Image (cartoon, rainbow, N blue to C red):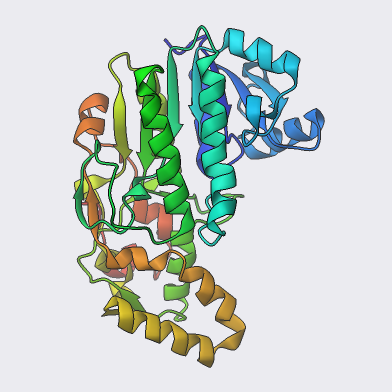
Length: 350
């Protein structure tokens, strides 16, 4: 039952978090948004700037806190009041920067998970604790990744993946005493007019489109699992309140994910092995020294294409009764302007 449910949401000013807040508020939930800011007024300003103007402020309670700290960084009064009143906790706060030192990434992603779990343990009305992870906790795994899969020794491509993996381990171990559900989105695409920092994949796509990255690791057949902000938020919001929902769900395209060739073949991109691509990047850095920081940032995530994988969505689609994707992610990526991938290559979602 969504109407009147009291949901504590973290990360409401982030790319996916703001869409979750909008979906839940429109569905009739009463939201408590924990927002990091200098003051309560600054926290409310951040929310007003992040959310669509048609979202009713009457559905929102904004509190100034910091989920990295014990008690979510809340004052004693707010902490006690929220513990006694929340029905659902949806933890979507995270740092999504790929190039941070590991301890810095852990200080947000792992510490926040610990803080949320400790808070949830003392919430007597809590019916569900939902944790937004990432499909890329799979790290350097290749092949089909099932939704129950988590523990592996394949390693990681960046500190974001590793810190989110460690956070999810903490959360899943709490299932013995907390009503935990985990959502793993794949690449969440920002909309063309988004005010948020551009997504990593859109950043890479723009480099390809402008001719600054004429080669990529992987092959034309490499799956690129993309999901729009709207589809990810709608799927999570629906699953959040399904009585039968439990375990872990890939919020992803799965078998419907486009292939890399669908996206970049129109630009004449060459496909290289991982080592040769790394050598090419070093050459580009030398040829275009002003772009060296750009290529350094690229190196923190682009090698994911060298580890092709399909995120199995069997459990998620069965629970939803439909695929996660209702929007064409390629349209969200490039639009329908003349000369776009869709216009030039006729790419479609599988």
